[in-house]
Amino acid sequence: MPTSPELSSSNAATPAATTLPTPAPLPQVQESRRRQGVRWLVVAQVLFVLAVAAAGYATAAFGRTITLRSTPVDPRDLLYGDYLNLNYSISQIPGHLWRGPGRPRRKQAVYVVLESRQGNYEAVGVYPQEPTVPANQVVLRGWVADAFRRSIRLRYGFERYYVPEDTGRKLKPKQSLRVQVSIAPWGQARIKQVDVLPTSSTSPTTP
Amino acid sequence: MSRKLLETDGVEWVRKGIISPEQHAQLLALYPAEQRAIGLLPLLGSLLIGLSALSVVAANWQEMPELMRLGLLLGSLTGAYAAAEYFLRRQYEALGMGLVGLGLILFGASIVLTSQMYQLIGYDLTGLLAWAVVGILLTWLYRSQFVFLLTVVIGGIVQGYNTGQLGVFSYFTAALTAGGLGYYWWRRPDSLLGGVLATGLLWQAALLINHLHIKITWFFVPAMLIYAAGDWQTDRPAGRALQGPPLVAAFLFTLGLALFGETDTYAGELRPPLLAYLAALGVVLALSLWGKRARGRLSSATDWLLLLPGFYLPGGLPLAVATLVVLYAYSGSVLARAHHEHNPDRVTLGTALFILTTAVAYFKLTWGFMDKSLFFLLGGLLLLGLWWVLRRRATQTFSVKAPD
Image 1: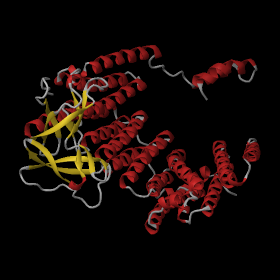
Image 2: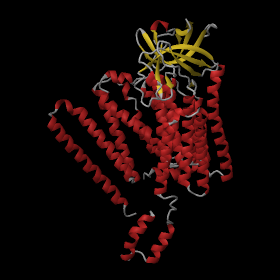
Image 3: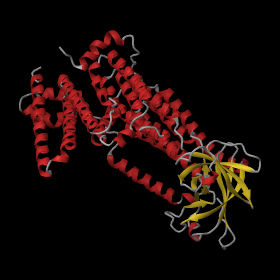
């Protein structure tokens, strides 16, 4: 006679299951021990957030600063007026700079080698693996946003610049910007300063 | 039985003489009224005040000095945990755990907002990984269902961010979720947690398959590994709950194969290298069967019918028909087992699967050569007839069971 699995599991399990790791019920954590654990965990969380802030200062202090050319995308079309979308000269690069096998894939992480051209850094090569470069070049991490036949669109993560309200509205659509980016030796990067190029009378904005 | 039922219907039972007033009182004493920790109104009130504070902060966020923003984040973070401990000590369980969850969410928000404040780009995973780690540690410290569920969601968010923004899959996050939360579920089996955990892990598995750009059928190797873990769980309902999401995925996939498998291009998209795929799935099958045998549930091995790799068959009608046969065999086995087990919920499930399969089969095999109105008429009659037969069968099963 067939028995239901529920029954047979409790019956048949006895010979086999005794040799198996049958989990013992997990007791509650003792209240004093729990409170101590939580205290440590909260301290760790606070320290972690502080470490993120410290990394921000350290990147600016110890990082290598490079200058990039950029234009704001739709500065008047700000949702809350609190950030600018930036389009860099190195956001769109010609396809022949790709130094990997095959074609770049969307979302792929890449290493962009930059070199100074008249004060601004421009892309000279895009690699799938981190290359070693001479001292006059820097490597920036990025991601492939779109790969076309003749060009690659890249995303660097600092396309969004948070500014105090209204600053964005003072900018013209095609306004040229000079963006200073710090790249820390350990690989983090942050925007240090954004300057409006002198074609307009708008004052520079700093973070 | 709930106290509410006793309170409302109990009076009627006393009136009809089924139980005496004393027995009614005794029964009520068995189910003491739950301590309403906190009324709804004060809770809503504090929620509104919290929201207003939040909107004031959000509106002025960019204008505040950096240190003040940092202080606000850290202050609300520690405040939430401190308040949680305060209320937990006074036995307000739900409120306390809610505040722990708030603290955990605030930790994630603090990481994101602080990086944003310094325009900082991180290229590694540590930032959000810390969030998932804290979630798992809190789950273990508080042994709380709510924090467990929150951590499953956080694990999914962290992995989604990794693959979407950073272009990498964090195997560590996946292993941490599976290990840290999986082991918790293993030691404290629970149906709800099992179902949600399996769903969260399937989400991460799907992200992995998408990230690796491999055939989507590889998804079923990790999915069935989760299923196999359910076979080893001693607590049957919890194990079944963990197995639910992988089975739903496999069933929907097979249903899709029956509907669209006819075009060879679609089936071609599904074919991973034969030997590697079958070997990997075979290992998982062996693990699953071993678990079933050890726990005495070999009858549920029919679940694996859904994993028959029919997509290796040449496309066209034979593939569709073979897939439909598999679907029928599976829903039939669910029904048969449900009748054996006298489990009304599973009978309903099996009935639904059977009818769904029939609908697909009918649609698939007759749409082309039948007049539309006749098609719908016959289809409707077929489903109604099927429903009637299955209901009759179910009623018989349970009326036999009723006397004992």
